[in-house]
Length: 316
Image 1 (spheres, rainbow, N blue to C red):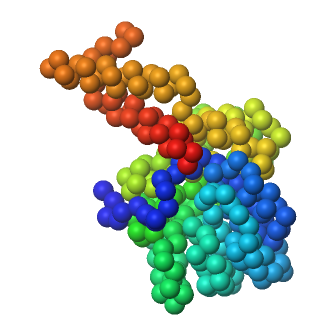
Image 2 (image 1 turned 90 degrees about the vertical axis):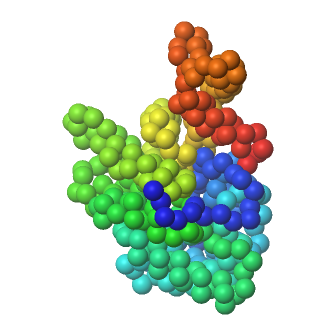
């Protein structure tokens, strides 16, 4: 069981399938991302910004948050890792100036519950100082060996936590797993008799579900490899992820489609609910639908599909 509640703010319920990364120092790219069909936009101050450009990038992010219309998208700021001299300045400068203009802080390389708590406490001080009307949430990226071993503790570390995110590139580096690129299969995957990322991905989803958090899959670097990207999306959805990060606008449509219930899936879920409810009304605990037995477990699975569809139908 999770000891904490999932992050709740005063925003409407929303279904987050696609999260588009954009370099924090590029105002024009931020504006394009804000006008895209992504469900969330992440302004990146970490890997997408060179060391010498980080102070200037913070200023660009603050200005963009204050001036750009994100059209209801979830607004995320990824800070630098806590093992760098940049993270605390990212939090203090951006949150103090624009903490009422974005929704979540993404914490890269979360390795322990203490990492999440550090961000939580600093955000609390900033919010009290600035008098912001609602809290800023946190998303934790699981992308190190330490993070994998501490997923359960990370997931329950703070009431601000909204999501757990898989970071395949840094995870491969941390685990000394050979990989030619980020997120895409290569010869090393072909040599392994199974899915190389199954353990960490499945654990992320399990921890997220236990604590009422979103689970997001990491990026796929080969943005021109449409078929490979679609397979990656299908795998993540099959494992229970809610959505996937995008590094290019061309990937958004595939993600939104892959992580939305299809018409046939919704119809089957509706039929399952009706058949089960009719069986219960007749005093039976199971029912038959299209030659298959359905019971309470089928009902729960069907209701998950219908809830996802309900959120999509609201345009969230």
